Image 1: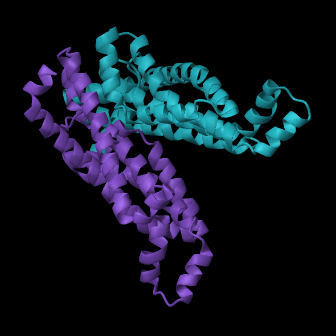
Image 2 (image 1 turned 30 degrees about the vertical axis):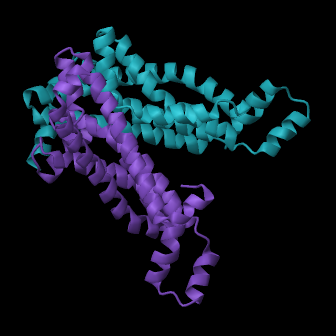
Image 3 (image 1 turned 180 degrees about the vertical axis):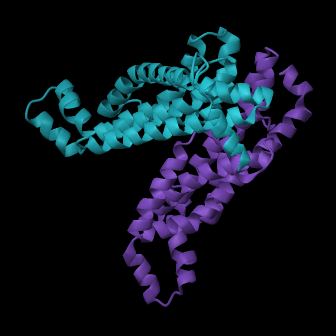
Length: 214
Length: 215
């Protein structure tokens, strides 16, 4: 605790950097997956291809990807953007399946009724389809968020600073406290972020609280 | 793309394919760690998962523990275990085992739970003992999900064993971590491509196995 207190400024910096590297991939991955997943939920052939592609992407190990991505896109090896890109790809791979499942479970009768009551495509999507898919989407965001927060730490191995830097530094200095503090902060960050998604879900979908879901 | 041609040059250099530092030896090492880890983790997680799925007991606890383990940063656990228990093979393998347990446990209990309750009742109705219900009905019917758990665990260990090179484990991660230390990008990239190919081959093998499984 004394060590953590003495280094609180640096810990806050690392935590903010870690937060940024976790939130951007989850949000960008989700926004990219929304149209792709919706498309996959409507048509069988793209669904099979997209889910297979997502599955393969998800099997690629993170550290090698952190090495391959800068080679592919020409960024500097130490650029934090590589970590953001790799984690966005993972989030995207995870979300495409979840978004496709979320939209697939919205009943066709409900959609037909919306159309029959004169909803335009956009009104139907925003007013009926998206809210009904919401709880499953939220569950997906929570899963992706937890694993992303944990995966960011691997970036420390390629020199991108975040809470994972406490692991590499603590290891080199043979200082267990630093590693323990790092693990605790990563878990706290994951829990706080999870609470934020749940809260956001309640704000956007107030009806789920009545049913005790979400 | 010149970095890739350098990586391919590295991959096609004959000296990188021989001796204890050569690709075949590193691949075998990597597969050895993976097999050892997954066998130990399976011996713990699969019986436990089957028991949880069969009896329905401790289910909430299992979900909470697997969720919490997922939040635990791999690199933190690996470095802490080594500082605490020293280098050598046992500490990193122990950490890898801990990380491989959640997918195996989840595959086992979700598999048993996925079996239709009426089928299980019918098995009891014709006089099967609980053990027979588990081994002759629930396990065969949940084979696909069990294999799915095994598949996730294997791929996760392949990825994590790469990271474990940081704490001195051999295997393919050596090319990456040693390359990072001396800024040898072709070696890092070459090693990364080998890991990716290995992961894809293993995933493909499991996909085939799951397709062949009866359920």
